[in-house]
Image (cartoon, rainbow, N blue to C red):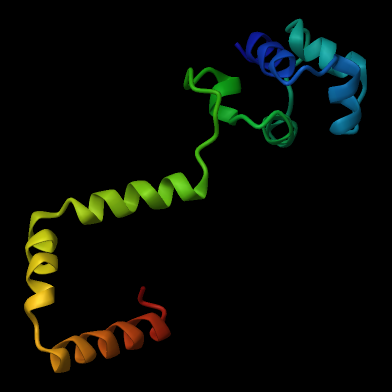
Length: 120
């Protein structure tokens, strides 16, 4: 699986075996051996290949068909969506504008305390 996926990822970036080898400080022969299934990259080399080709080790290993890496921003967005879709949170958020200014200031102070303590 790695052999086929590595070749696809390399070609999608319009790199020759030699160009990829130069980027990861190895030889064209090593890349050729990986792509032809004669040898398998070490774990460290697999991570380096994935990072250089802007894909994931899971894609190269065949654990997923999606070659695009998930960015931290995507993870943060997914976590926020899960948080925002909580019905009790939605109810609280809708009622928030009806709160007294004094209560909103207290809430903000609590938020700052939690943030400063590293709990958030």
